Image 1 (spheres, rainbow, N blue to C red):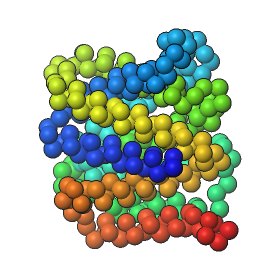
Image 2: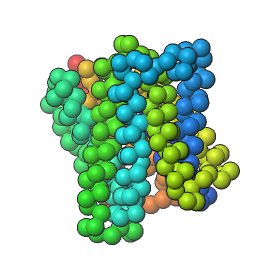
Image 3: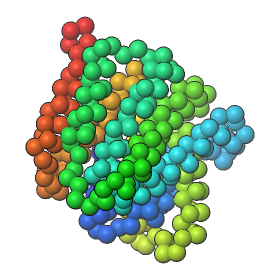
Image 4: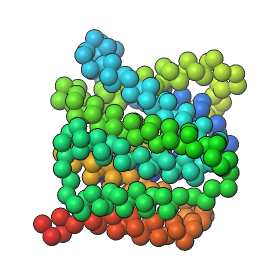
Length: 287
């Protein structure tokens, strides 16, 4: 259930950004409102154990968890820069293919040992994501290659950081506190950046959109933490399957509700993604 919830909530985030584009809702101020919403919502859910009452900044884990907020806002900036230089399609592919980073770290640092079929499925999943890339008509050629590499690294570091934080501190601090601290840190940085930039203050559309995005984003992170905990020892598998699921669901929604078209290679990618999931779960069918 955590895996399904993670896939659906993450796909919902992509749908919300598509709606932003359709209604000309600016992304950056919406993102900042989103982080503030996550922080407020997290403290509300924590109740008497909110991060102010618990004085969380005095705990040994606080600097590491708060540092994730910097990763979050940095990855967002890189994706925005990549969209401008290399196009939305190429940037999306770079972010999705970064799944190999948390998977590799899980095997190297957490000593996970996925079987041969799972490894083959992971490689196939990366290739399937590449095939499902949107047609890119707004890119600027090789000028964006360097930022695509940074998007790849940044997105991979976010997932890796969340995985390591959950494994390292998951027994001493709950998922809601971790999520609230991460989003609160990102919110502080975002508000500061918004205030020093002209014309970035949110309008009512950004406030409304940011609140909706924030509620979904908070649910998405809680779901990811829940799934990481449920699949402890198999997180490389989780990140690969989760990534494929998000691409599958968001692609189908784009086709059905946003009338987007995908190329022949995109359909091949969808089929290869299904095959990758089958390979990574072959042990469940044949023991």
